[in-house]
Length: 266
Image 1 (cartoon, rainbow, N blue to C red):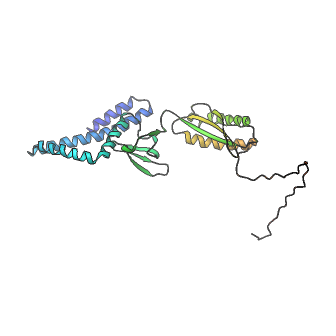
Image 2 (cartoon, rainbow, N blue to C red; image 1 turned 120 degrees about the horizontal axis):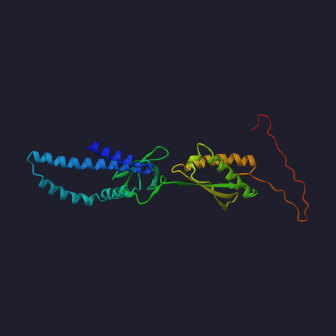
């Protein structure tokens, strides 16, 4: 039976060129193996009892009554299996996806009818009962958008900053490592907002699934170098002192005196 299941899963996967469909076939194959093992074990147990001359009818009747009693006391468990069935049927989560469910995010290592096992960025493993999953945020489907906010000083020219941002994006598209990760040219959304000390510009990349974080980090790294080379200031906490003047326009001399610490002093 196990060999037949593996053969069926291999044949399904062999006909699927889509990587996403292959992941789904692997997930369904694991759950199907589990269900078959449970059914085979129950049937084998009943057959063994019959061989020993033990009537299974009273056992089935008692099991039915016990099942009703257990059902009332294990509603959450029933909900887990019920939700798990539809999660698999609707192809919401598959092994290898990166998702956020029940306020937990990470790589899906296992999907069963009972729970979903996630491993987060820090390496922690989370077992999430399917009954707690009401909303699924899946980062692994079709494509992703890497949304990036960039702050520049108020005195800088916005159009010049946009030109540098496009130039850096073009360099990434031509890069042999990052080029395949980018599915489209950089999209400049425009001026997103005015912060206390910065004009915030927003842009985004359409990227391959799960590449939004690496693309964001590399783009910001390159953009920092490009802004430095062009003299475009990225705001940071600092103090600027302006000398006042009298109402008539005149102002006394403004002098700054630097006091050096004595040698060996604090």
